[in-house]
Length: 97
Image 1 (tube, one colour):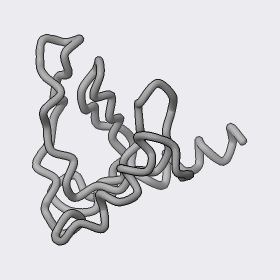
Image 2 (cartoon, one colour):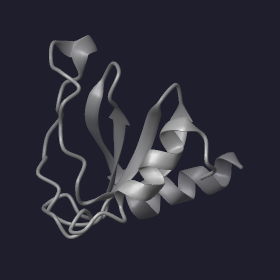
Image 3 (cartoon, helix red, strand yellow):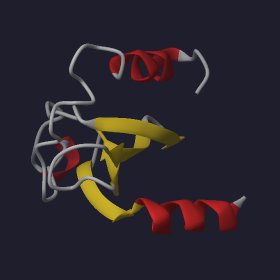
Image 4 (spheres, helix red, strand yellow):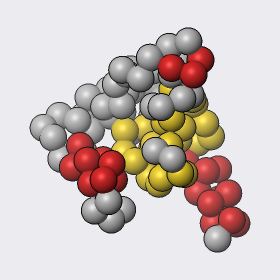
């Protein structure tokens, strides 16, 4: 990721002490503001893989019960949504390139 606005913060978040070692706490959807929830949720234990657009990111879960899965992080609207395992996500990404 380059140094643009939110991306710079995402690059540095995983450098905070304990960020990647902290278990990712979610196992089911976590609603964002557009679904009756809020945008205050933890993404500790994840690594941002890519920006999909408009501040929405694919995150690989590193620790916790969802380790190995890629979650959609749409803090502005949809919240956190579980997705495929990394192999399936990466294979789909390769096909799209």
